[in-house]
Length: 146
Image (cartoon, rainbow, N blue to C red; front, top):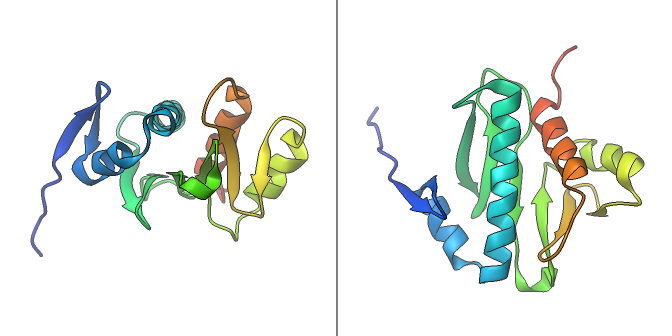
C-alpha cells in the first residue's frame, strides 16, 4: 500500500491540508472568514476534548470535514456555504444522528436548524458561540459510552 503525502498550506495563519485550503479559498470573503472562525472553534473543541492531533481534517462531499480520530467515537462535522444559503453558513452532521433534535430542544430560541442535519450560523455579526461549541462537542462525543 503506497503512502500519500498531504501538502499543508497556511491560510490565515493556520495550517490546512492543500485540498481543504483550496475549498476555503473558493468561498466569498465574508463566508470564508466566518467558516474559518468556525474551523478554529471546531479545532479548539477537539483539542480540549481529546488532546493535540486528535482529529482528522479532510474533504467530505467537497466540504471541509472534521472528525475525532478512530480511537474516539463521534460523528463528523462539515462546514459549507453555497449561494442558496444566503447570509448563513452551515455546520452539517450525519442525518441519522439525534444531534439536531437534541440541540433544537436546548437552543431552539438561540439557533437556527434545518431538518435533522444542519445548524445555521449567520455569516456576519454575532452568534451564540457557547451553543455552537456545545453542538460540536456533542457531535465529537456522539455515541460514546458513558
